[in-house]
Length: 97
Image (tube, rainbow, N blue to C red):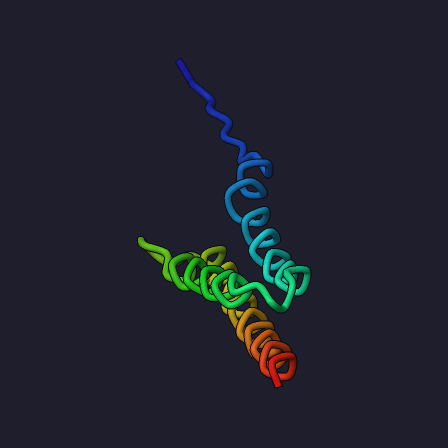
């Protein structure tokens, strides 16, 4: 008696759990430029996004190639978010001059 088990990985779970959150967290900081300069929530929005990225950049468990790739993607997003935060502060400072 012989049993054959075929296991397939669904790409949908990878997209839902890794790619989609990364894309959303990459596009979300760009919305800060839609908030009016007079609003005090502009800096809060950027800092909240940075906090979320700091939490997501340190995954628990063992490191696989996919996790290292996603960590590097999140690190790039963190750098991009930092540059957006600097640009936002520059806009606020020049507006209030």
